[in-house]
Image (cartoon, rainbow, N blue to C red; front, side, top):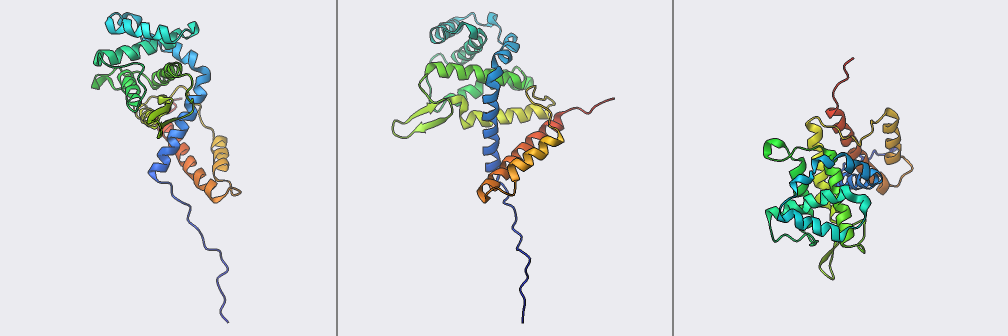
Length: 248
């Protein structure tokens, strides 16, 4: 009488695709952006010298000042206003017909273009500012677009198929998130470590593994957890690689 092998058939864990990892990194970027909003005033203040007022003295700059003053009346946000004025002036100097109040599918590109000007490599004609400058710039532009359309959702960016208009905040678009993730990777490879990052301890890695890959999770939850764990691990390794060795 033949007997069957009683050992359970091993199942390979699903391997996340590049697209799934990319999706998770974008999600983590949005979560980081939300958490940084609690301290954004200090972050903006730290970088104001990178947005000098004496560069805002032409027709485009005067128009930008008029626009921001009319749209934002909160006097405690002077740092945000200066960044916003630089954003509007940057685009008007490139294109006099550029509309600062326009919000459409091109707006995420406008945001990325300005941050590139501030944070792109000096050898390519950009200013070479740090990643934290990009974070503070994004926060200021979030304020700008929130004030332009105060009734819009603050948690999404999507095309309304009925009205064919874009809803939500362009700073939360996938294009901007992908750009920020790529910029952070580029800065890390060049040796810059994000000042907003906290060093991960071994306990953090164990806790993260349990959270993402716990045996009590459903198959769908474990699959999503694997993707998230890989994304976190890649981000951690990226920072580890960029951190200079300790010299005692």
